[in-house]
Image (spheres, rainbow, N blue to C red):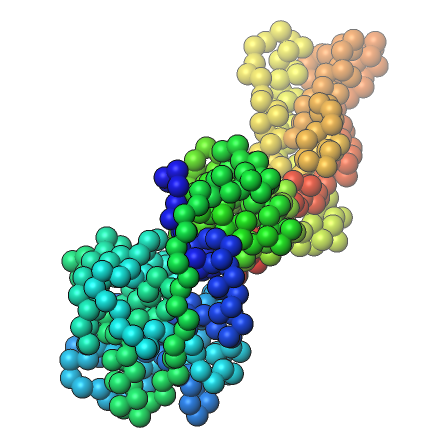
Length: 557
């Protein structure tokens, strides 16, 4: 951004970052006092052609109201092709971003070659301002725009809602029935949108964007077309813009006491201070200055007004300290591991403020993927809680199955044989008793549906899921086979083993298999009773779950 900026004196930040001065704000306030601004009449239009399945998008201009219906003019090709009309047409009003209203193509009849269509929506679905005013003073009706004047093109270019060129483009040709503007920002999606002069008055409806040229039907000719068909047209003259002045927004912010270090997080603190003090004009100067704002810090400190969000995104000013883009930020809201297990640990920092518009607009493209991951995370957490509740109620049954499975899979005969061989100084293959124990616990786990809530140990954990001390052998169910084996060897130690029998002196104690058969049931019973536990999600998991629900809410899910 250059050291000094030419700032047009208007208050519509979402359209142009240059429109940010004290006088501009005053002008916008004056327009608001009349009840409506041009921006409030530009709607986003989306639909689908039924045969091809092709999606269509563009914009439209509210032109009138009659008989309980709101009339919206758009470019005809947005909702009609050579073969058919679009279906499932939806419009969004700027006063209600994200809220889609069903629209119908009105069977209007215009002269051949005029690329205009009328959409209608129920008056009850429109914002109060549009539904109640007797006239919409938002256009330049009393004079024609001339070649060489500046024009803003405003619509849905590339699917980016309520967007357009950041600085005015020059009118190349101005005729009674057509305006031509050359622009580097001419891309699909502008059709049906508004051409605005530098005073933000509607001067035309965009009907063609091709090879860097935008063609519009002048607003006065559009009035003839619509009224000639007997349809309502309520646009009227708006006041002209005030003259331009030249200021340096960075210098101006410094004069007003703001500290700008260039760090996106520090800048957010100052930006938030401006909003909290009700200094909207100062907040707009931050945008004019082109200083980046960190998205995490921004969303966790203040509810960002919708027009500010539009302006920040339009000018690519939401960036992290590492210069990561807003898309990177959206992708980082939810992480998924190799098993597609999602987590969204945000420490609750987005919970204080309603930034639904910021999230839904900034993360529009990533929203389906994020919502899918969040849904899985939320379901998994709630299933965990439900499983704890269910299994706590059937603990005795689980303990019984545990005893049966551990006894059935205990390699007692092999352990007895190994003890016999060791006593007679014969070689043998040692068993991996921990591995065998783990295998048996997996069988128990599977019998009861698995789940992270069921654990087979009696360690103590802290609130974050970490063991408070190193586990001992008897704190794990999987160690029970080793406990049995060690108890048998301890009993045999110091005894005399003759063949398969254990003697103390000349007194027969029992056989080695009997020894294992006696020790095993008690050890297994005690371990199953002590080491089966059901744990609720730890504090980190609970916080992540709450964050997931909040982010889902912010995304409109």
